[in-house]
Length: 311
Ligand code: ZN
Image (cartoon, helix red, strand yellow):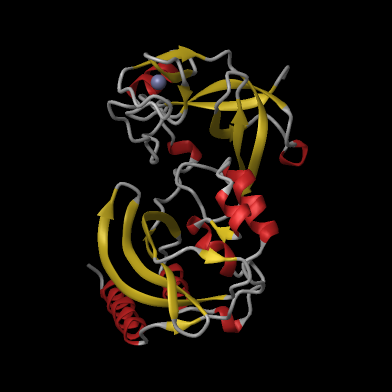
């Protein structure tokens, strides 16, 4: 290990200890109290049809973070003990980021009209560790949302890996074979059929062998009849763009930014997440007709992606 690298590690460890010692730091209160329009949008986006929220003026507990998310133009009051740590990690070359853990705890339902205030506690930094994505540090923090002065209503533990992205290969050094794609899907007994299908140019959707219900992403149990017997159906390969984001930052190993991540609604009745490709980003539109296309990422992995229909 070089002297400068050692200094960087010591510097990061010292800063982490300092941030932990700050304890819980209150952020700015939410810009708006818990309100019906936001709850309505959330329920629509999540496809949650439970009437209890709007009928009784309750917010889904999973919305906790929504009320106090500061947005891009946040002021100095919204800075948390995590921000300085992230700045230092970026400064030392750990510019990649991937979320690894998130655990939320809900103490009670929050009602329309309540004003929430977040408080953030930096809980620790572990590393440097060698991972599949590169050498990096795991940073962990806790956010508690308070109603009024001191009643906690929800908590969240969040952990990210901040890693040093591998250096890009120079074009003249690129071998004819594709290098291993760094972001491999988790293939297990519930999902293997999907990835086998992608490798053969088939878009396979899991279906219940008892009641026929289609489901995606795949899982062990039928959400309708609880049967563990499953099979799959091969989708037609068409769809429409239901929603999308354009990913500009942070850098993603193995990918060039910006790129489009879409939610595609299939005529079979399920939605699937995938990249929208072969289309200028400014021409991407919700509702556009798409067709699946298969991209070989390396020797093993083929990813289904989505291109404008007819192109
Ligand atoms: Zn079923």
